[in-house]
Length: 418
Image (tube, rainbow, N blue to C red; front, top):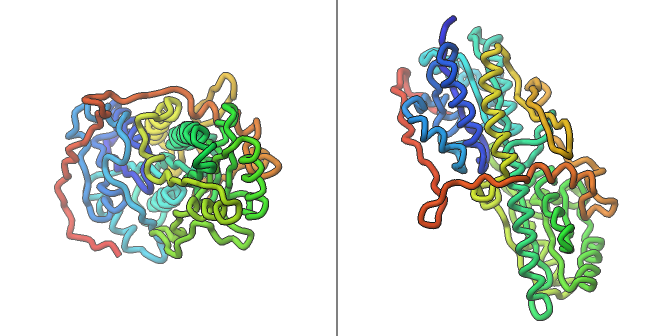
């Protein structure tokens, strides 16, 4: 059997555990030298394939690859770049084939979210459209937890843990000062259309913390919101608001919309927290503070969920196994088999059913008033934030690996990305 090389790339916003998936991919591939030769990583995602800017991961020692498991961010660089359809931009697909042919690449592993699943699905169709045999496997990753057909997505559990801890700790701070100072703290979290991350803030209500959650799935009503905040402040002396960046009004406009769009065509969000905080100040007169978790929530490897780290690695590992089994255009998935004790198995889903599809919070995960989480949601979330997987520390700081990222010699003419 012919031994072919593999291409692996990271796409979209990175997470605290995406490198754990990379570790799973590379370590597992190294255990099958009879099937997979070298693993080439794309520098800055799919752009690395288009520009033939490949990284030879075989140049990295085993201990450096192992250290990826405890290192946040994207070890090979990521990008926000969405391939158009074959009909609209044939030159890019033909370029991919040229690069894959030049470097004997027969496996394509793309580690990302929904748009990356779409890209991976399009690449999987190359073998039919352009006559080049290629197995394309999508490795799931998204802090938004909005990929369908999988119980959860690597990256989400650690963000949920970060948000739950931050909500708890900041709320205790506010409680201490509420008598004479801040009475309302607003924390803005990521989540464009799905409120999974915001929901994690609701886990602290078991600690007696009064929390109001603003979900993308629930249309924002200013009067009802202010009434709830005022009631909680009167009852407890303070309250915390966790607002998703995707929170929107009845007309569909985002509270945080900036009027600009990213490379995927999505509205660029950020700024819901000050909007909400100022509403509270102007209508109720309560002193406030606000914060935007932004990159902090997705890069916090120091308090990553052990469950999340383990699943990220296992899905990278399973991606290689699916390729060796001859599978194409699929994504390894998490299939929950029990909440308590928490158990799951690794399955797979066809990319045709994953690409361009979002998974939202079920309505029965959100309380009837639209401001909190139900017991069903709590049962879903709690296992995903369990366990600690601390990196090694030196001089008070985590020890993270930076790979040498040795470039593979180029064989083709320069290609300009449109």
